[in-house]
Length: 123
Length: 106
Image (cartoon, rainbow over all chains, first blue to last red; front, side):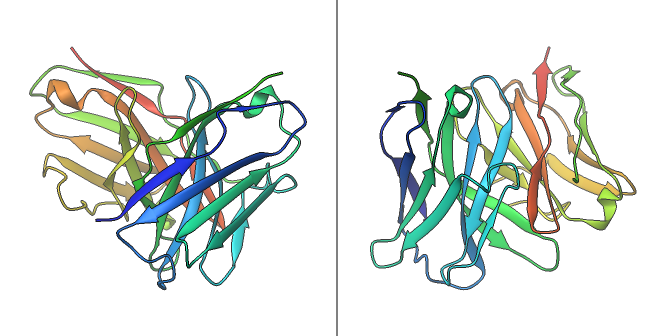
């Protein structure tokens, strides 16, 4: 069964770039019909979609974060990367990666999710 | 931009039926998914494409979607169903999550 594991620094200084890696096991990230996504959750808050991308390189971002976010992937290493630049304390959150199933027309759903990684932005 | 709205909290007695609503403009024209998140854990998909259950999700969980409202229904609610529940839709290349509903089983 597919498993996802987030990794990266748990502490980032303001104005710097947050960089996270999601490593996928039990599945190929090159298959059609799936995307790979990042989602975050502020402490005590709800879920916020960051973006997702296909193995062919098509990327889709949350308009509110688009100017600061870059997703990329390494199919050979089965890794998906998130970079979020110019971070502030408002970017402190648990960051999840998830597999996105692409269904008919307007169907997009996330399953499974990684365990998440808490990233704190502080000097 | 498209948005979906959930009530902050819903309470239910053990063994009763819990209903959690998710509202948005013409939401019935889109597919809705639902996620359960227990404290300290990652979200888990419980319903996708309005009413389909992933493997391993009990039949007690069901979904519907029509007009402007999607509903997650939990029949015979158990104490371990106590969690936060999030609806999610996709519109014009953007994913939207509801703000989440805390289900309390009293």
